[in-house]
Image (cartoon, rainbow, N blue to C red):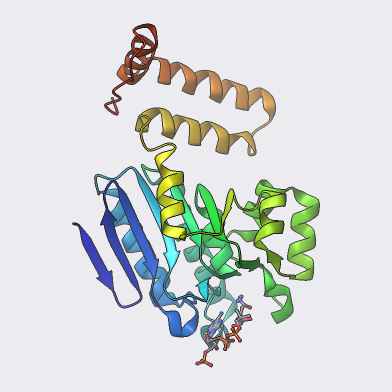
Length: 261
Ligand code: COA
């Protein structure tokens, strides 16, 4: 088993999955600058592991992550604050470049930067008692680690504005209804994460990457340009050995054996 641990997180290999656990439960896994740095290093490390998905969760039974560490937020210069926001954004953006999809397992509170981390993952699964929100406005702030940009892409502008401007808390049931999470589970969250990941980990990584890239561009580009990206990426997918294998397996009525090639 491949493992790595730093002061505030654990990174483990669990079969064909990497599992990153934020591990500061006494502070509800709040994102200190140290923890953000550790997440950055852990994502680099996970990118080099022979896994097919990354699961991200929080230690303890209360919180996925209660957001930026409020104790560290005060008395900063504006340039320091901007640098920190850009660093947090860059760390979470690493999830987009990860060779494998990521799933946030929201095991309790996911507030502020915690929800921003979860939103940067490819997918989200929450326990039924999870609570989520972007409460920065209550501190006189607004989200700075990608929340104002990713939330409208996930749930639409009107709902995003409401959540950012009221700072109100969303239950897991509402999060599911508005598309903020993909699944809610009453059972064991890690098991639910493994089962969810198993729905796509058998497919070839090239096609999965092209799919992630094409869909993520959909909300950035005018339709005309997005369709061009889709034409290019679907043609690239067509050129893979996996596509040849997939179509041959269909014709031969057998299960395909994808080789990530
Ligand atoms: N930064 C730093 N410490 C935090 C934190 C944060 N974002 N969120 C929680 N903590 C700490 C608390 O200060 C407390 O530490 P202490 O025991 O040393 O006093 C510990 O975690 C437990 O939190 P507590 O508030 O006692 O738990 P709770 O169950 O009563 O409330 C929350 C949980 C999540 C509702 C509450 O902690 C909260 O509102 N946190 C801030 C959320 C937020 O605004 N995030 C965005 C920041 S920009």
